[in-house]
Amino acid sequence: MDRDAEGEPEGRRGFVFPSALTVLAVVTVAVWILAFVVPSGVYKRNADGNPIQGTYHRESAPGDFTHRLGELFLSPVNGLYGVRDAATGQVAPDASGALYGSAGVFLFVLAIGAFITVVFATGALDRGIERLAHRLRARGALLIAAVMTVFSLLGTVEGFAEETLGFYGLIVPLMLALGYDRMVATGTIILGAGVGVLASTVNPFATGVASSAADVSLGDGIMLRFAMWVVLTAVTIGYVVRYAHRVRADPGRSLVGFRPGDRELAAEAVEPPELTGLHKAVLAAVALVFAFMIFSVIPWASALTGDADATPYPWELGWSFAQLAALFIAAAVLIGLVARLGEQRLSATIVQGAADFIAPALVIVLARGITVIMNNSKIIDTVLHSIEGAVSGTPAALFGVMVYVVNLPLAFLIPSTSGHATLAMPILAPLADFADVSRAVVVTAWQAASGWMNLWVPTTAVVMGGVALAKVGYDKYLRFVWPLLVILAVLICGFVALGAAVT
Image (cartoon, rainbow, N blue to C red; front, side, top):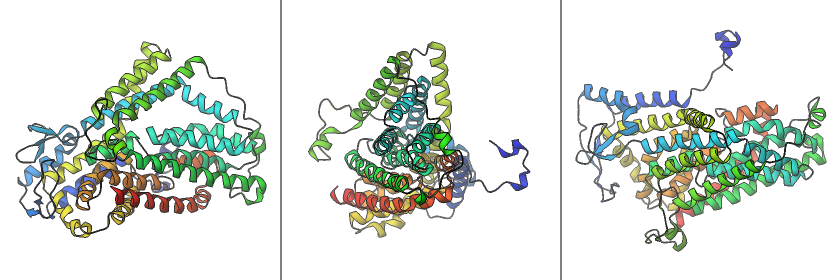
C-alpha cells in the first residue's frame, strides 16, 4: 500500500528504487544525448544482416537536431511497430521494409497474460499445489522437493514468480507443523520458483524476449538450458533440504528461530478441498498447451543430429511469436470453456489478464525504442567495434562466462527481465558472432545472470514480499542464501563455458 495514503509524512519516506518504466525512460534520454557524442559508424553486413568482423567504418548519421528530437519523441512508437528501411537502414513507423519494432513480442506477452490469468481464475493450479503439499505433509523432505520441483517447472516454462506470494499462507504452517522453521518455507518458495526462472527453458518473459531480440529461435539452446534446469534445481532442493534437516534435528541452529504462536499457526494447516473433475481437466489442458508450445519451437532436426544447419524434418513447426501469441489466445479460450467460466466471465478475465501484463509489454517497447535511437544515430556498430578487439581471439568458454558476469550489474540496474533482454541483446548477440559462439549461449548466459540476481536483490517484489510474508527478515534471508548463490554461480559459469565451447 502507498505510504502517503496511510498518512505518513512524505519526508520520512525512504528511497524507493524506480520502476523499470522510469529507468528505461531515463536511459532513453541518456542514450539520445550520448548519440551526439559517440562517433557514428557501420559494419558491412552479410546476407543474413549480421555484421562482418573487421569491416567497421565511420559514417555520418542523417538529420539535424530537430530530426534527432523527432527520433526521441517517436522512440516508443518505433519500439512497437517501427519498420527498417531496406535501403537506408533507418527505422520509422511509415518506412517500407522489415518490421524492427517489438509488436510480435508485445502481443505475445499480452496473450500469455490472458492465458495465465484465465488459468488462475479457474483455481485449478492453486488447488493442485495445495493438494500436493497436503498429501506429502508427513514426509518433510519429499514435500520440500515436490513443491520446489513444481514451482521450478512452472518457473522454467512460464516465469512463475510473483504468483508464489499467494502460497505463504499454506506453506508456512505446513513447514512449522513438520518441525521446520520459517526460513525453510521461504527457501522452498523463493528458491523453488527462482531457480526455475534462472534456468528458463521456454519462459516467454526471459528466454522468449531475449531470443527474439537476439534473432534466434526460442528452441535454440534448449538442450543446454534443460540440463541446467535439472542440475541447478536438484542442487537447490538439496540445499534447502539439508538446512531443513539441520533445523529439525537441532532447532537452536535455526537462522530465524521460532516466533510466539508458531505452534498454534502450525495447527491451522487444514486439509484443502479435493480436486474436482473440472480442476483435473484444466490442469491436463494446461500441461498439454505448454507441451505443445515446447514441441512447436524446438528445431528438432538440429537438436537430434547436432547439426545446426540440418534440414528441418517435415513435421517440425518452427513456430515463432506470432503463432505462439495465437496459441495462447486460443488456449485461454479453451481453458475457459473447459472450466465453464461462462462467456461474460471469460471475456472479462481475458481482458483483465492482458491489462495486468501491459506493464512488462510496455517495458519491452521502451527498451526496443532505445535500440531504435542507437540504430538511427548509427552508434550500435560503434559500440560493437569498441568491444570487437576484446572479443576477437577470446576463448569461447571465457566469452560465455564474460557475458554472464557483465550482465550481473545490468540485471540490478534494470530490474525488468524483459527490458534487460531487449536492451542488451542487440549488442551481445553480434558479439557472439565475432567470438564464434552461438547466440543461443548468449541468451542462456544472460538469463542466468538475470535469474541469479533476482534470487536476492532487494529491488524484486518476489524476494522482499516473500520475506515479509514469511516474517524472516531480509538480512537473515541473505545469510541463508549466500552459500547457495556461490554454488549456483560456479555451476552457471561451468554450463555456459561448456555450451560456448561445444557450439
